[in-house]
Image 1 (tube, rainbow, N blue to C red):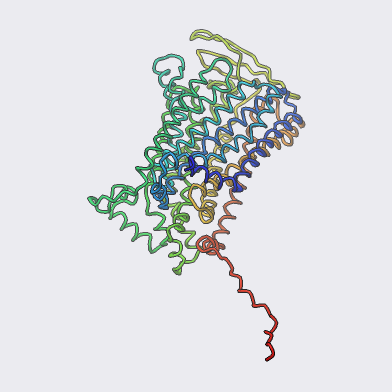
Image 2: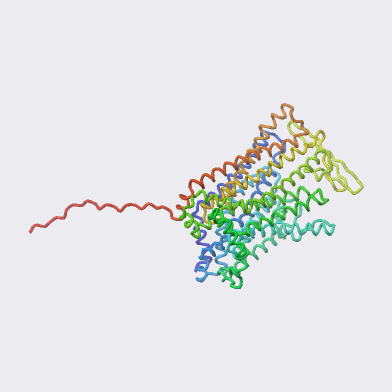
Length: 621
C-alpha cells in the first residue's frame, strides 16, 4: 500500500487546479506592485529616507501582510475541510478501509497547505530584494521567512483540530478564529498582565507560544528568544495535529438525539429555541415571507453578535475610564479592529450560508416550486439579516463612533502640546524620574518642509509639541469619525449583498465567505490604499504647499486627514457599486443561476444520421 495514499491523490488533484497556479501569480504581482509603489513614491516625492530605510519599510510591510495571509489560511482552508466530509457522509467510507486517522489528516493538511505555501514562496524573491537595498540583515530575512512558514503550519493545524470536532461550517469558523486570537494574543496579554501586577519588566514566558510574538522577535535586533519560541510553536502545532489524528476516527459518527428533551437535544434547543418561541416566530413571519421565517429560525448567530457587542461596550468603558492614557489609542484600536474583522467575517458568512445550505439540502428547489418570485426570496434573506443583526450592529457602530472621536481629540491635543499620551515620533532616549523633566528636539526635514518637534518627558509620560500647530475643533473630529462609521456600515451592506450572490455560486460557506471578503474588502483595499498614498502626495499636497494654503507645521495634520478623506470617499463608491451590482444579479438571474447549479444544462447532441451506402449487389443466378 502507498504511504499516505490520500496525500498522493490530493496533491495530484491540486496540481491540476487553476487556483494552484493563479495564487502564486497573484501573490507575486501584489508584492511587485507594493515594491514599485515604494520606489515611485520615494523617487518623485523625495522623502530623503535613503535606500536602507526604504528597504526596511518595504520588508516590514510585505512580511506583515504575509503574516496576515498565513494566519487566515486555517480560517478559510482547513476549518471546514473535515466537517464538510462529515456533513456529506463521505468520511465514514474512508474509515471502512485500512486508512488510519493520520492518513486522512495529513492528506487534508498537504492538500490545503499547497496554495498558502505557494503564495508565501512567491513573495520570498521580492523580499530578497530588500537585502540589496539595505536595512535588513540575512539573519532577519531567514528568521522572518521561517516564522511565516511556522505561522502557516500552526494556523492550518488549528483549523484541522476544530474541523475534527465540529459539523457546522459557521461554528467551525468562529471557533477557529477564537483559537487563533487566543494563540496570537493570549500569551503576550498574560505576560503583560503579570508585569503590570508585579511592577516588573515584560518577561516573555507565555508569549513564546504566540506566532506573532515569534514573528516580531525574528526581525528584532540583538539577542531574542526566537529559537525557544519556534520550538514552543512547533510543539503546540504538532500537539493539535496529533489530537486531530486521534479524535477524527471517534468523532465522524453522527450522534443520536437525546429523547429526554422535548425536541431531541440541548443543541437543538440552543440553535432554534423552545417550542413556544418557534411557534410564535412561525406565526409572525411565515405569512409575511416564508424565506424570512426560514432564515430567522436559528438564533445562536444573533446571540453571538450581542455577546460581541457587550464585549465592545465593556471594553469602551474600561479603556476610557482608566488612567492609563498612554495605552488608550493602542488598546482601543486593537479591540475595535478585531471586533470589526469578526463582524465582517460573520456577516459575509451568514449572508452566504442560507443559499449554500438551501442548495445542498434541496430546499431551494422546493421554494422555487412555489409561486414565490425571486425578488421576494432575496428580500426575505435581506430582511432576515436586518432583523437578526440590525440593532446590535447599530450599537457597535455608535460605540466605535464615540471611541474614534475621543481618540482623535487626544491625539491632536498631543501634537498641539496639551497633555497627551506617548508621541508617535520617536524621541532620543531620555533619563526621567518622577521628579525630573527632560527635553529633546527633533528636526524633521523633507525637500520643502522643516518642522521642529519638541518632546518633553515628565514622570514617564511623553508630550510632543509642534510649534505653530493648533488642534482642530471638535467638528472635524466628529466629521472624520462619522465618515469612518459610515464606511464600516457601507462595507457591511456590500458584504451582505455580495455574500448572497456568492452563496448562489459556491459549494461551501467558507469558500463563499473567502470570495466575498477577498473581492469586496481585500483587493479593493490594496487598490485604494495604493492610489491614495500615491495621489495625495503627488497631486494634492504639492498644490496646497505651493500656494501657501498650508503651513509646514500643519502638514502633520493635513496629510493623514486628506488621505483618510480620499480613502473614505473611494470606499463608499466601491461599496455602492458592489451593492447595486450584486442586487441586480440576484433579482434578475436568481432562477437561472440556481438552475445551473442544481441541474447543469448539458445540451444533448442529436444521434448521427446513417450514412448513405451503395445498394447491395445481387449475384446473378
